[in-house]
Image (cartoon, helix red, strand yellow):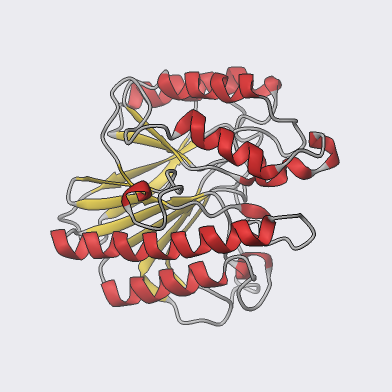
Length: 298
């Protein structure tokens, strides 16, 4: 969000409501524009201005609409690599958040061999380690039909795996109560009724699940891309897989539903992460997942 200038006013109301709530920090999980809207450098700067209008710290992780999908004809058949570079230059030039009260971040530029992945960031607050990880829709850019896409995907896939492992290692070293990750993609195939793990997300899910199981303490995974609020406390990583009781999945609003999610962190609680919707007064009510009937539940 926002998807189109018709949503700008609602988006600004959302930013005002976030400021009223005064959170410790705010995270945007990618897709700052609609997939069929051609990218411009001016709009990247406009979004940056919105982030800096937040009174606290603002952290952002890229979505596929910003760069992966600009090859589409509706976007002028542009080069995704060019726009990925522009996104990195605009939002990730320094190791600190955006917003009026920026906080320092540890980024992957410090890791040998992964210096260009400046968008992967980590910070600690209230006894919990938080991290962004650059995983995007459109199969995570694992798209053989787009020149250069698979090579880009493989490099970022390796960086993301290393970053997930390093984040859990930091949590173990500091005795953290929980770990939270933010990313744009919806990588869980079972949400679409598909078995197994989609190719662009398989390694990410394999590493995340293995680390979460070994960690044992609470893990929060926050993603966008579905555009609908979703909260699953205890979840399998694929259809028919074992439910991981220590993993909570939180999906954000998006597209025309201009609202947010709110997470209360309590390191002294056994659950650590208490999550729910943050609805914005004056904005259209959101679309919520339909509750399953007893006859549909499995």
